[in-house]
Image (tube, rainbow, N blue to C red; front, side, top):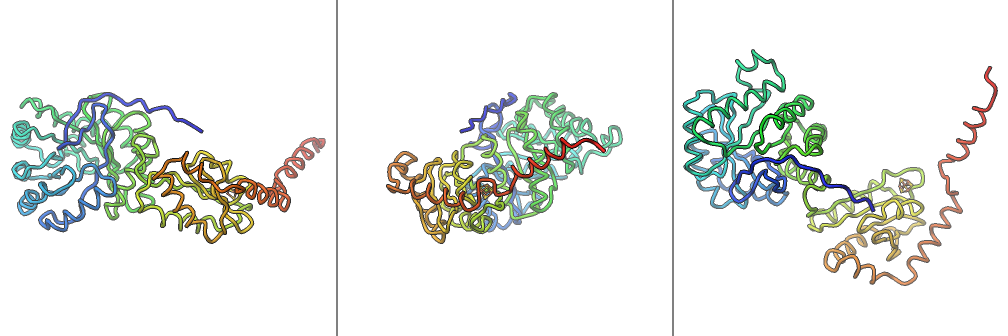
Length: 409
Ligand code: SF4
């Protein structure tokens, strides 16, 4: 079984967003943002609970008017996760959000530009022990910075540095920073440059990534590239979709990179081929639907044939491979039961629960006597039927070699 090495993370200072640590070696966190009007307290809280359930550690809400700030005062004491207030243009709304008890502010240096206003907010945040994210966005850069540097990584980083200068003038350093862009390569380049320039924790994101699936691909391309280089302390997928999709994507990315412990299902499935003895796409979709809301931290494999399936997925906690109208259920590659084809998904659910409740060893000890022999007989029968080279690769290789040996014309 493959055991990946740990990603060496860049060292940073640490900020506390409520009781959640960001940077300084803490777990990388997942963020998302509500799409409700913040003044709608019950609607916003319902979405915050859904986001927390989907894996968000921190949630941001817009604070775009005084009604939103008043809403925050009611939301924050009832929220299961820390709340960040998103501020644009009006520094007085940042002060109102601080009064509401917000756990962090996000300021956009591109649209709050008066030094006195920025310093007033930073001084107030300092008094209250509340961190601020400097949220630079390639689409809303300060015009004089953009005139000087163009839309470049240097411009995004300069924008963050200018804001940091104001903060330093009032002795405030409880900071995390983002330099988001909708262009993936500009985003990657900007964060790389920023990580060489400062040692504050970094919030990663590709802004305006768009609707899934392309939006998820774009965001993953940027965020995963940086995480693999050890850059990044908290992440957000900015998708044009239900924000629950953002939280799930963030969580799944961190789990896939081994940066957070798995808390839910990891379904792997073969892509199917000429050997498949079952509709793999349908069985995998049925298995996903049956398993994903059970909250079981198991890796489950759905494989289309018994010839290659169990071997290729032997690292999975649990799996099923189809052959001769039956499903061979295996735990860590060892066949534990053979079931009729139409019971494959039910068997996966039953054994996923068993593994979660009792562990792999107990599940293995509970295997059906004779299951392995029955499975091997099926496997041999399939190989005898199809041969062990169903794609005729050996024959093709022979043909290629023969042609290569012919004299040239
Ligand atoms: S497990 Fe079997 S059906 Fe699936 S891709 Fe591999 S050989 Fe094909």
